[in-house]
Length: 494
Image 1: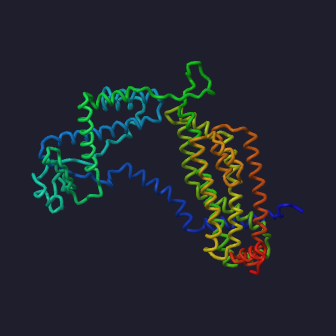
Image 2 (image 1 turned 120 degrees about the horizontal axis):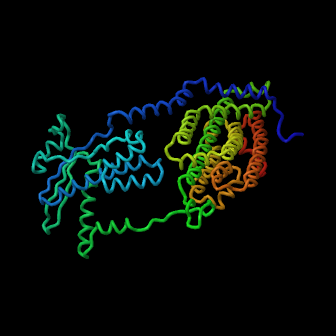
Image 3 (image 1 turned 90 degrees about the horizontal axis):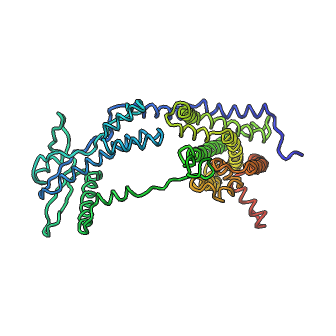
């Protein structure tokens, strides 16, 4: 007697095709399929249009002390200059490290225009794609000298005329001298949920207090900042890489880090696919049971053929639903490998998507999906309502969430014993094995993990088939399981 039930491939295929086309023919499926593409197109045009969902706020300052307005405005200018610097340097993150260092030095010593010229010489496409930083906070001259007189503007009874357009005054900063000589600051606005101006002024006065404190000891904030920047930075080296005794060629670069990041993304994507497919199996099984369709199918189909057919059909459906994301991911990876300006990223992606990674990703997707899918099919057969299904599936959902914890652990501590242990626990094995691949675990460990998970899949399918048969033939729900527990375990009448 075979451990697994016999199946007819033709009938199994017909059930798989029925489940697949049953979802694919619906409007909802195609709406979800087109949605990521639609949002991508909208995001592209929104990013290249002049439409601004967050228009600038116009504020004013009434500084009766005459000592702080210039400093606040200078702090605001410095903020936007820092954003412009960060934007230019961020555009060069895909370029080699030596060029990024040269670009940063050029910006700091010769200014923004020189840095843009250097970036344009190296990569005209990156330079032309940069947009100037739009100011979302602008201070204007006060249309009145007191808060009382400013009230019509703050309440938007009156508006400002700026560049030929009427604009509201969002707020006013009032600075006065207190009784003991300290500044008293008040911020007047009707739009108090936006705290940009408030945070700016708070930051200015905190820096002012810090500078006064340092000056009392004969120190300067600029000198302190220079001292911090002059501190040596730690460089990371990998002793297993080939190089000389001085460490040349052994420094850890993006090429070394990308495989770990890619493994984390793939493990997360694997979890998402397994979760989506398993839940669709549950709802499909429950719907057909409640509508008495499964009883009709059993007239010409075995239990095992229904299970395998549904597993195959929903797996194909899940892959189809994820196709837009997979296609965009593959195109992006191929672009950076063949056309990307940074060789480090290209080499890292080639190492990340090795034949070993792709083979084991496919294997663990199939095994993980079959393991969880069989569980959800069995639970769907036992359920007599959606409430039953939610009650029964909660433990499995918690197990899936717990299994996902191995992904961040694997990224931060790839040599953690927990990852090795998790690769032999059936529920977490698919994700733990994928996240461990960049650390190059022994092949025997991966094969043993695969064989162990495959054995569990056989056991779960066998048990699920029996539960499935019991659930359908007895019309079982939670009360049947409860009665069995009382009768068998507690030795009481149900």
